[in-house]
Length: 187
Image (cartoon, rainbow, N blue to C red; front, top):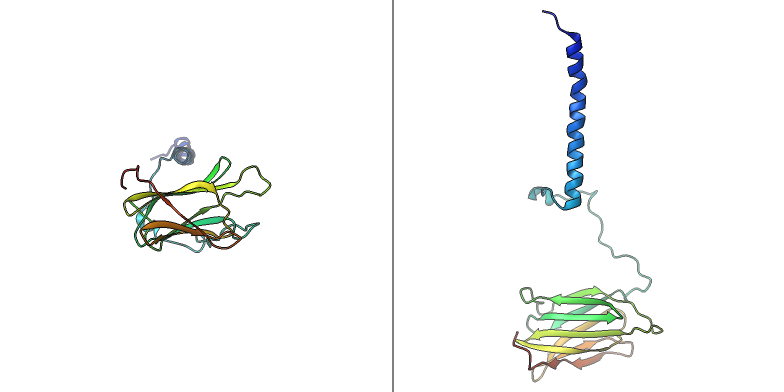
């Protein structure tokens, strides 16, 4: 039996070409899927694996003004609350929205990045809130408020069931009652 070396050589040469074609198609398909959001999810067991190379410490970026990067809303009302709380400077805002299906628990708190401003700016910091407490809507009217670093707005309840906010301006603790909105449907 004789073997045709020409045919055998052609087959050997074609084999790597076929491998390269399938590799190129796989790479192109991966690029298309990555760009469009299509693709396959990793198995759940793969998601649970953390390796030393993929775990990095969760450290916030260095700040030029430590303590002035975040503000928080703290719930000390005795029951879950939901609604919105926000800071606005010019046309930029930082808003916390707590939904009814996942209310903020008693002693819970949420933080958001702070919008920076300067006293020489035309834009001043406005704060406002719209909170559901005790099945009623309460508003912190939009007004200029100047909390100090590590701004924390703490909500609590005063005698008579009035919702109350306290925060920390430079001059010392400041407080204000939220206004009950009797015209809005119960929440």
